[in-house]
Image (cartoon, rainbow, N blue to C red; front, side, top):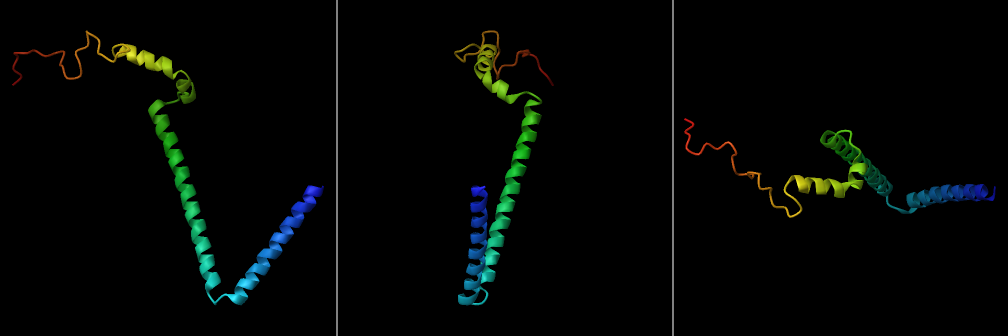
Length: 120
């Protein structure tokens, strides 16, 4: 109950300070100054909203691209078993040393090369 009382006191003090501050600003600042400050605060709010919308759009697009790339795979589960997947890929591509397998022709070799055959 005490906390609620102090929250109410804090809200009331804040409202009074804001109203008195605006009255003092209107009384002592040149005409139009508060309009400039209001415009700047509106601009700051608009910038914050635009930034928030941009970040939300980026997150949505990232989720869409991730879904298109990996499908319905649980990415956290794949990351948990990363070492096993890396070992499987290394084994498939030639072992831990990174050298290609002996039966693999290589990326620049054509396995169907006819050597002397003319194509035209």
